[in-house]
Image (cartoon, rainbow, N blue to C red; front, side, top):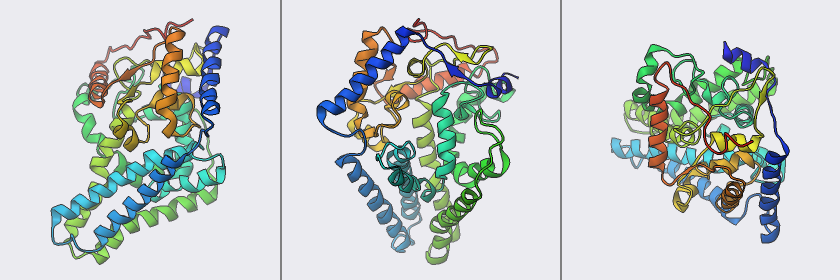
Length: 381
């Protein structure tokens, strides 16, 4: 199968002087921006405020839940659990994501410490770095980009073997998206630690013993904080607490999934494949322009809450730059792409991005669906 062939070969991005010139100019201009402003590419005062804000919001929300003040009102208590879940994804998007890209600080120890916020909200920093790295290195390349893997549940690319159930995927996908966070904290990490031996095209991975210990210890902490302690100390009925635990993950889960999916799986994206020698006919920057789109870039509130995940193109090209700088340097990217005759893809609103995501899901629900490489970036020679 193609998946086996792709994931078993070494994939490289090929370039030429003209394509390399685009990246050279873009890098000079982006780095020049920081030099001209006399600022660091890492966290600034705004980022430190966001970090403190996230900590205060989590402590405050959890204290409200555990205070028993809401135990007599099921709806309010479940609402507080749901809010805790949204605080968790705020932490994931705004702190954990930058830290795991070593974009929060120039000090790797600080990034490592803040990266454990992933463990605190139920995931695993070590595994996230490995899996997210496989996505970043080979975005939208079938058989290597782990975010395209769904074990037949979805068809996110035309190379995924079609199954009869896929004809309905543009209807059932959203319900399963809601389970994304629940699956992550209950199943995903265990599966990749104890079941799977590959991540993308990395084969026969041997995880250090200490990472198993860290993963299991943090899972105990997470389940203890979000389920065991509420069951012990809250006066609310058990069924209310169980629903509360679910709601930490369901609405935040679909929010988390859609924000990410709309940047890569949408009407207008491409799914480049390597040739028989494992070569992708583009350099990485232009590959990103083909496969990634921004949305709501000019929404200051939206971008602030989403940690710049919606400003995704520049993130893939410069993943080690803190997200608070994305609005400014994305304008540099847009202007440079236009100057070189390349296409920068964006949607003005989340709704527009969601509609394009839905259209791609519907398009790929057909067994004969194809997604040709079209547009300025795809045809750039």
